[in-house]
Length: 123
Image (tube, rainbow, N blue to C red):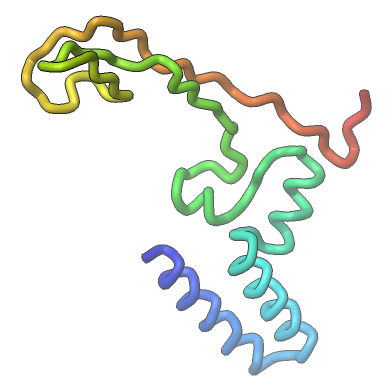
């Protein structure tokens, strides 16, 4: 659904670009190709390279953050329950909503990933 919405906006921008200078139309077409291929505009690629983060207008639209912090969710922690024949493990607590108490239920670990070096960052 978001891709269809994005395509409509880009088609309108391309139509406006066709009415103006040819260089503007080429720039808009290049942004359309880059956005469809990588979910980033050309400016997003430059900003991502400078800051060393994953910045895009798509993430701004979806999450409200232009350069969201990347996190890693470690799901090695599982919830295990006794069943009729064996022990059954899940990533969600009480997946069948039958009120069983888990044998082991530590929460998943969420930690930020290290930031990549930007183009102008020094050691």
